[in-house]
Length: 238
Image 1: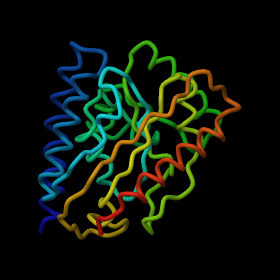
Image 2: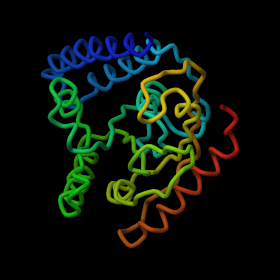
Image 3: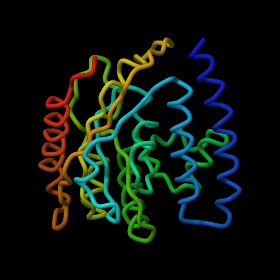
Image 4: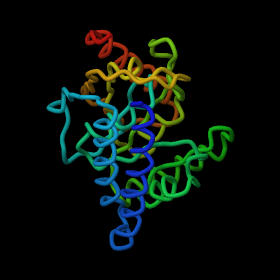
């Protein structure tokens, strides 16, 4: 029953916040109104699922600075947890298939989210180039799950360097994050939900100033190690 309740809430709140945000975005091109809508949408989705969340480590970052937030990925609930817990104006790096979903995808476009064609390497690189220029003209923080897909076993798998390359191109710091407990809320491929406490832990920023394309492997390795270390030190939620 909780799953059906959540799906109904997801549809209703997506229409309300997505549709309303689209109308309001006519008067505000930077996407900040839709950014606030995404935060409220995320909090309501967590509430509807009966999930309580906590955020730790915000003192590690500057609220006035934009970042690329990179974390582990275990469940669809990683997204609302991140948008609800991160106070910055936040957009995501998403697969291009989401771009044309009615209302949801349109709202993401209006909010200036970044879409990448994962199946086409050249197009993906061009998207990142355009995104880096866009971030300079319209500063905002980016959400990224560098594993590329959700982990089925709870382990953090190797990070893909494509999305993290945006940190180098835009010359913005990368913040490692550990998301805890989301994998137990909704297992991939299952419909059953488990209400429990989930947590978002924010680490210390990794600077990218002065880095170039050739540094991408080293940067990816460093971000991966920091996320693994952060989660292993705090992984106490079953």
